[in-house]
Amino acid sequence: MNGVGRALFLVCSGLYVLVALVGLLFLHTVGPDTERNGELFLGPDVDRALFGKSPRDLMMENPGVRRFALSNLSNVCGLLIGLGTSTGSIAWFGRGERRATWSCLLAHGSMLLVYWLLVMLPAIRFANISHRRMYHPYAVIPTVLVPFAAILSF
Image: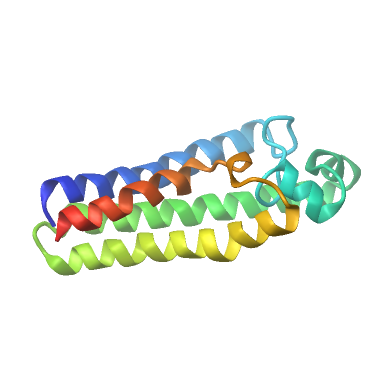
């Protein structure tokens, strides 16, 4: 793994950790039911299509939904911290080893494939909205950077 490829993998890993830490801070200080943060699954538009009401309305009507949203989103943030920490460690300490490149590519690639193929595409089809309305930087930026990191690392 050379310097440029490793740096790109580290940027992706750092992004996962940063987004998750900011998300946890925001969730536990402001809450999941604010106007800006009101989502249960992939965003207010998808949530409205899935559940029939806006996430904020659902959380106001039923405190259990609010607790579920807080717990679920905190769990996702924890998984992102784990992914970012492990792939960042592999990229940082796996200097010059091809297996480190493969490990980072497998970890980032599997997360992105699951996100785009099993989460986003069905949600976009179900809610019948544009993918541009659900911009999630923790997935879009690595989707662009990971192929370049892999190519530059081999």
